[in-house]
Image (cartoon, rainbow over all chains, first blue to last red; front, side, top):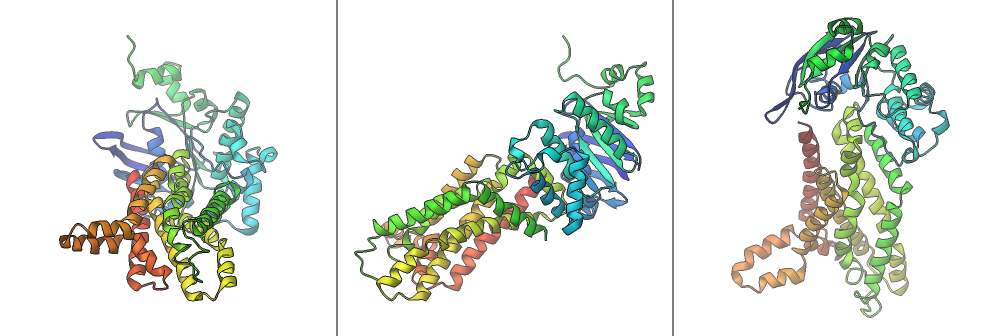
Length: 241
Length: 245
């Protein structure tokens, strides 16, 4: 469902993503791990069509994101890293707006909004202004907009960032459930999430994939610990004295 | 369809926040105040609005118009919602035009709500309705031009204040270089300034606007202002795309 081949992004002389290739199939949840600045968000922005790639090919459900971005974008639900929202809108109004932008209208739009509100536990704040929401609700509102059109592919950039432990658990469960029917690519800093929600994971460092496998395989590579593997294959921003 | 969705969202946003109300009230108040003070509406004894009312519009609009649209793209950059818009299956130009039209409606309303001036001048005499219509059309075209300039400027920054200051500076410059006292100053420098005077008259907003207040909207003015609007909106599209490259 997601096929990425030789993906490269250069900002001037610096390669943020360097010849990256991976695929995510239906029923698979791929965890995207890596330290800050590893190129995770840049990769996700290219996969969702927000950033143009310097080189490489991205295919979403056999549609090229490079050649036919509008069609490819229809297949994707995307939660950006900072969960951006329009603060002057209500949760319901925002979801209606996003559903319209996804081409939903009338009863289909009403049903999609109601389903997303229910899935992301937003009933109690549905009529509340987004500007007054807590971080957890804001995150879930943005997650809800990514589910509106029941996309075949979900790209979630740090979906549990800023959530309390209960909310994290709920979102991990949700990702795992959604992953049975969809192809999900999600990035995280939290290594426990790999074992909790992913069927496979890759570790990215300085724009290249340095480890790839199922959670169990990765743990085995790290001598029984994902933390040890992460320390071994990634670069420290500030080397220890 | 998508353009209409964005247009509705933006228009609603102007009216759920104080922006539109503030603009409508401040513009209505200041334009009337200037007409009755500096414009000497009572003393000119002329049943028209061009000399006392319309003539001050560009001076107000060059400051107030950027205040409406300064946030248009700057805020999308600042809050990160541009990432949502950029991943919806839409053409970027639909978003640009939708936002632009929403701000244009706010200004159409602000101009329309100065209608008591039309009632007053009709009560006092028999003004030429075409001249009044032409004056309003000229004001609206100036609004659209300044809105387009601000749209372009706001696409370059995530800071609304920077967008406001730069846009006001550009709008002031474009207004002032066509203003009669400024042109006269340049004309006084000698016959060699003839070319400069000609250029200033052609590119200055005020000269095009002044003709409109007298009921003479020329094709040249329409092409010039329409050209500035188109170039700015097209430039916004290019700027937003190139920032991601």
